[in-house]
Length: 201
Image 1: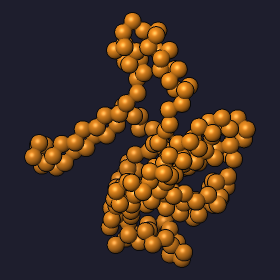
Image 2 (image 1 turned 180 degrees about the horizontal axis):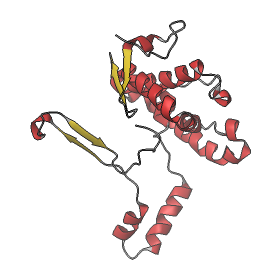
Image 3 (image 1 turned 45 degrees about the vertical axis):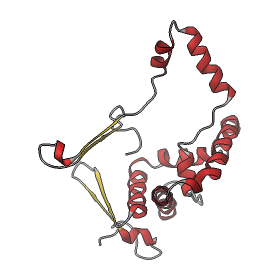
């Protein structure tokens, strides 16, 4: 299988030989992996090529380590994120193997990209990420500050329904089986509210 063509053969990560990345003439990546871990590795590589720092910073923030990059002004948020990170570490083993393969493959892809391009992101040289880091990006803990903000929104509204509508958060996805489409192919539309430059696929 054709591996990542822009990666030198020496010191190549084992997953790089299990993934093929093709880009359309518009630059849209198509990732073909021999397994879920390899596919996620390839996805991470593509995201790093296209978005770089916007992929790395959330992983560092998820650990509660952003102050190491941004300095003292990130300390407060780091404390909250460290609570989330601790929760992620406690529950990570409860995720099924396939999910952990995706998370760990993605982390390996980001880490490997940084290793192969040390001069592109010198401030992130030496960082190594894990599946726990990737999982922690979507884990959060509810603090009293969150509760206060939510109750304040409720109090300012005439009805609970109005206040919930004001929050404006959420995602949508649609999947159509081949039996439901004209051309007999599966169609997946994910997060249609995101802009093309959202920073991830």
